[in-house]
Image (cartoon, rainbow, N blue to C red; front, side):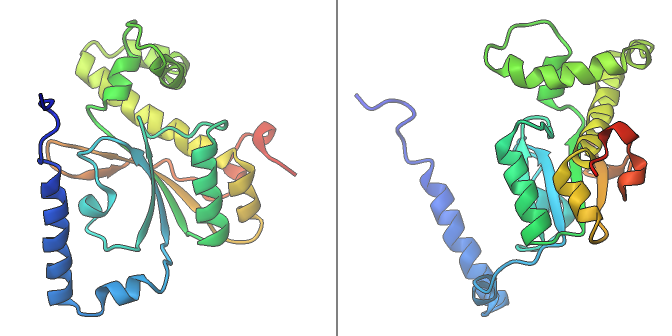
Length: 214
């Protein structure tokens, strides 16, 4: 007997792709030919894996304008070779001018990190957010409303990931040669607006000396 999941619903994605391709060619016959020539994005986007936060769509940008890395709760972890490889390529090969960490309110990863349930393997990932909570425990626990507390942790998590990027030798090596800015943003589902957290880091002088590489 066919499993209930073994239907053809996935085929609508292929049909959608055909419609999209046809529409793009109708508007610009050279659209795909231009894409084959390579990419020169000015931005690296480090965002959450949440399906409701597509980088190009919410910033109204075109294919090729943003280089994207996504993971649960938009974390920058110094042992994550996937993230570091993306960062290295974006900074040293594509020469992006801006790195954006974009979180979102209502983030499932942040909410999960705020409770004491056992999520198995995911615990290891969520611990990084729990560390952010502990670092800002006094501020967070002075917020009685749970949703507002979660929203603030979303913001603080983004700010910490911006700082984590600045602590990498990849970013610091780039600063020795050129300008590179790191930004922290948060997206809201309720209105579709991105808020700038005003935690931009432009150079090594914004870091505590202990984190600076010679």
